[in-house]
Amino acid sequence: MDLQLGGKHVLITGGSKGIGLACAQGFLREGATVSLVSRNSAHLDAALSLLKAQQPASAGRVALVAADLRRPEQALQALEQAEAAHGAVDVLVNSAGAAQRTVPDELDAQAWHDAMDAKFFTYIHMTDPVAKRMGARGAGAIVNVIGAGGKTPSAHHLPGGAANAALMLVSAGLAAAYGPRGVRVNAVNPGATVTDRLKSGLEVAARMGRIPVEEALRRASQDVPLGRLAQPEEVANVVLFLASPCASYVTGAQVSMDGAARPMVV
Image 1: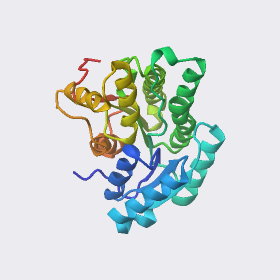
Image 2 (image 1 turned 120 degrees about the vertical axis):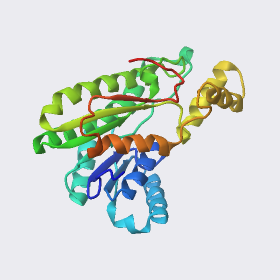
Image 3 (image 1 turned 90 degrees about the vertical axis):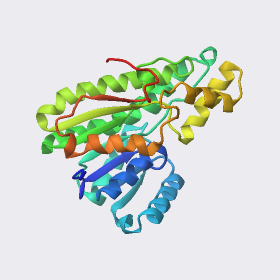
Image 4 (image 1 turned 45 degrees about the vertical axis):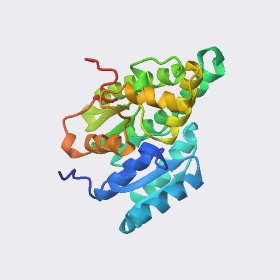
């Protein structure tokens, strides 16, 4: 299927690793131009090297922007840099930031604030100006990669789950607010996915269950009817579809991707 993404400018926050990087690989294969935003310049350089090795012809279609999206002024500067490099943003994919998983007895007020800064506001600080610019132009697509923890509470992911739930509400609300202006907003909620972030979550789960990390991984995989955890590329495939004109009547959707680990109707 031709996703009709050729020539589109896609800004990906958290684009240097994991699901964000998998999205970048997919968009480049479809002929899009991408701007990758991350706090860590070294991670961005490593991502560019990988993309060049995989798709040598795409090197000129990649821009790198280092920014701490917890700070709204840096998010706006990152957007300005990306648009200076590749023009107006047609697609925004938010995949930046992750709340630290914490045993409940070790939570304090700062942990809750840190989770919102790391996961909620990193998305909001970029989404707000991008949505307004898309609305003014009358077109655009936003896909928020959030997480299953916003629907199914986990004892070791409470602050992060709260941030995810807030992002789900915002995604649905923005879809209603900006739909009349030609902007679609959707969310993808992956379950456990094989990325660097998975390791820290498994370590906390192992501590709580007093089991080895390897056993925590086995149990996590066993809980999924498909019998395995998701790969970043599988999540990216859904993101690309939602961002594309092929999903032109899909907005306000919350797509669960947990392999039916927690089946639900809504």
